[in-house]
Length: 351
Image (cartoon, rainbow, N blue to C red; front, side, top):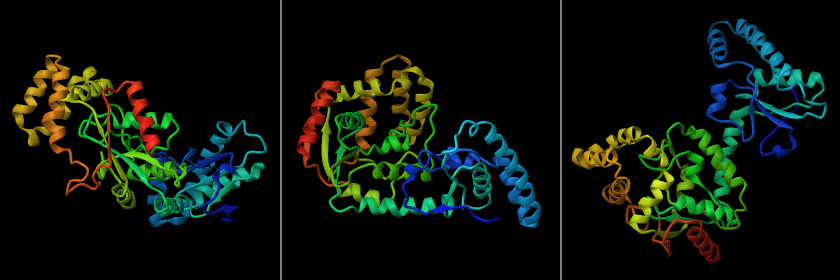
């Protein structure tokens, strides 16, 4: 098949009307280019079927693939593509820039649209993301201001306040869809794949002016099921650490405000706490269950903080910590918008 016009990365993707990922829905869900839409030309079952047949009879596999691709292309032309005018100029890609993307791109070009392909497809994009992330992290003069402190001192909410105030922020927990602890996955949500997390990280870094300060928070190397790429972990360890302090009773009040789903679904919370039996013992976990059952939420949260999280917290500057000792402490009296705005202004002024 004759290939259509291609682009290589890096390239200004803003010149395209739309970015079309023609891979199967499961491939798209695992990772895709930022802003891409999924118009699959083979669904998951069809992809498996064609791939299986290809092992013994490539000709029959291509014929079957062509049938499926033609049917899906017709469906897309009758639905999503039906209202596109002649200025429509999409970028199309599949796994390696092969039959799937070429087939749809040829059809789109036959209509009169300037469809182009990514040379090497998603596989080339994946290689580019890995290399470009390392390049961005190595930008001369780039440094991170790392907010550190035990669980419940409102670090993430302070990051959001900094962002609202115009500061540059790298919200790793937001990119990972996880709060960074055993209780950190919000019910009804799933974390991105490692590939998706790394694409989100690259995209976030690419939107920053890395000659100017970027705020983030101290994370473990693993955030739920995803982990920090080596160069990011190294960069975090080279950042300037600022310790955030909030009194214990305010930390408990903040967590109750930030994790309302726990009170709404105590059964789910108790199941999560069972993961701590090995570390904290049956007696302690049963005490937490009792407090939950009796609606003793402030007492429960203070105990979880004092008797679990604070015991496992590795302070910046400790021998086994990735992070250097804090250069400064920001004292929060509470977590109101006024408190957080005041702290954000202090951090921005310092930086």
